[in-house]
Image (cartoon, rainbow, N blue to C red; front, side):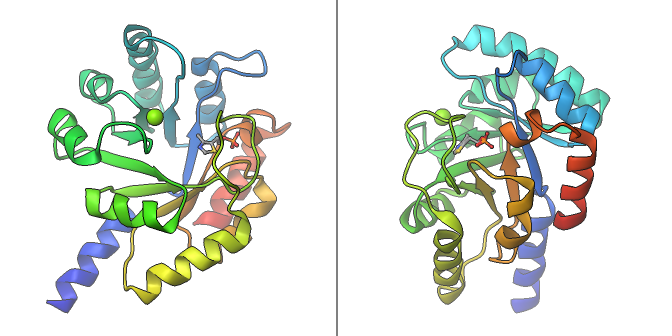
Length: 221
Ligand code: TZP
Ligand code: MG
């Protein structure tokens, strides 16, 4: 009944953190060094996102990333590679629109794993809900050089319109905004009903990463 549904949907939101750090090999840092920086600063949800490297090398980085995240009691999700997720017993998997379907990936990683899916449009969001995503990474918020072949920019209005359409259809799923997000954007992004944010360069480039993460956690909590 209605009560069960609302409890189920509360849980759906509770199990997804509100601040995700995305690893990147940039600014003279390796993926692992970028993760270490985020963990030290207080991030407890990390996405390992290694592009243009073979699966065996991603596995090697993932083993070290899992150990690092475990030592900070942080959750690790891994982009693109369900078998790596399974092998290192990560917290979950993130898949893009051109990767395998979420339902197919579940068969590989198991049914107790979080699976996030990328979306760029309202139609993508509906697709991800139907595929059984646990959360959606929706973007890009703004232009960023972190991702190649960027989809059209959504901007704040893009999130507003999309959240409005979702609520009209009585649909709800945790949505994480992504793409060029700066700390000062977060309050107004949250005001659209978005669940949380994923950030890479803004944290890597922050002069005071710890203070930045603390400030973000305060806004997001
Ligand atoms: N997907 C859309 S934008 C993006 C990804 C992985 C990159 C996010 O990184 P940044 O540096 O916060 O723009
Ligand atoms: Mg992908």
